[in-house]
Image 1 (cartoon, rainbow, N blue to C red):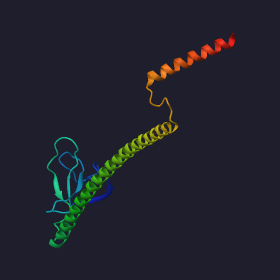
Image 2: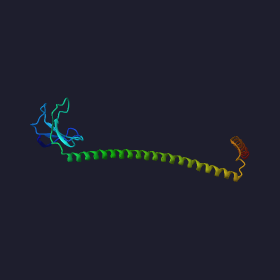
Image 3: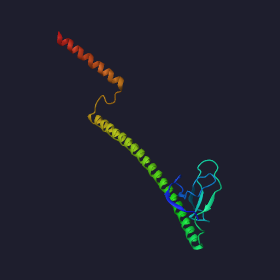
Image 4: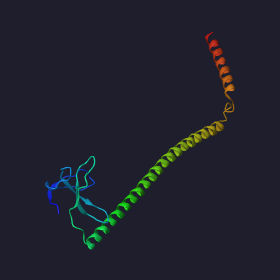
Length: 173
C-alpha cells in the first residue's frame, strides 16, 4: 500500500485528489496522485496514478485500497444507483419546472394581450356610447341642421356671414 500524506490538492473539481508520499514517483519522476474509482466494479476504491496534466501519461497505476468485501461493495453499488436515480429525478423535476415556468410566462403574455385588447374594445365601446348619446340629443332637440351634410353647413355659414356683414354695413350708415 502507498502512504498518503495530509496535503490535499485538486487539479479538477470532478476528482478528489490526494498527493501520495513523495518517494512514490511515476516514470516522469512526478508524485503520484490518489483518485477515487466510482465504477460499479470498484466503487469508491482509491488508486494512485500519474499526475501529469498534459501530454502522454505513463502507465503508472496502483491500487491504494484493498478490494472491497462483497457486502461493502454491494452497499456502495446500491448507494451509487440511488444517487444516479436521485440525479435523474432531479433533472426530471428541473425539466418539469422549466416547462411550467415557460407555460406560466406564455399565459402571462396572453393575459397582457387580452387586457390590452379588452381595454381597446372598452374604449371603443365608450366612444360609441358617447356618439350614440350625442346623436340621440341632436334628435331630441330637433335640430334643423342635424341632417345636413358638410356642403349644406358651409352654405348656411356663408349665408349667415353675408347677412351679418349686411347688418354691420347698415348699422354703420
